[in-house]
Image (cartoon, rainbow over all chains, first blue to last red; front, side):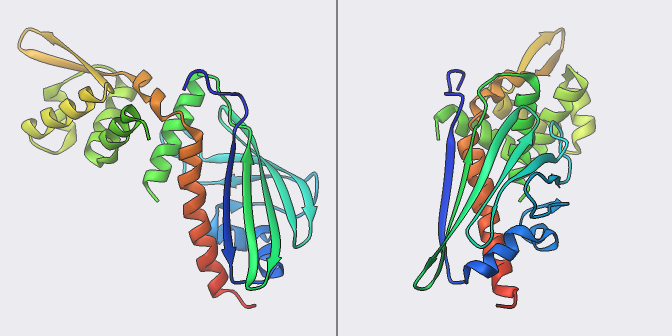
Length: 132
Length: 107
């Protein structure tokens, strides 16, 4: 993995039988975000800086730094997602469909450096995910 | 997933092995005896776990007299540096949680 391109993109898409307005609430209201993602002080205001906080694990302090980049109610949301050794942008796009909403999450900008913190964060993340 | 990645993942999937690896990574080289005292399992079990970690290149060993000393080899974590699969697993789990939350929410 040493020659990974500096920028990579991960896309996850799902069709959900719910209105975009309802999904938007789950994506942008702090207490609701906490229920499915992480503890946070998110506010749906462009320029707002916030943290997602998770239980620290060895090699990872459990903190993700974010800044709100795009707010287009019920349709598009983007925030930066920075944590030890990596910087990325997470973009949510909601598209109404006949049966509900097409939900698309795109995360772009994975790093390639082999820093110690990067490795540590990777291990921390793997463990974090292993605990889910 | 690449073979090396899978070997490392499998080696760290076991909580006892993960604890042994973390212990070595944190506190440095240890003998099998010292590791056994900490691990709460028998010495043959610890040796077996160390064998799996060694096979995944997560630990290295060195014989000194009657004792074998083990140390962590964190570079073996390199195959795990695959953010696509790491974040892929993370977000799929969070999508599941999001969907279950949406079912509980008022329309």
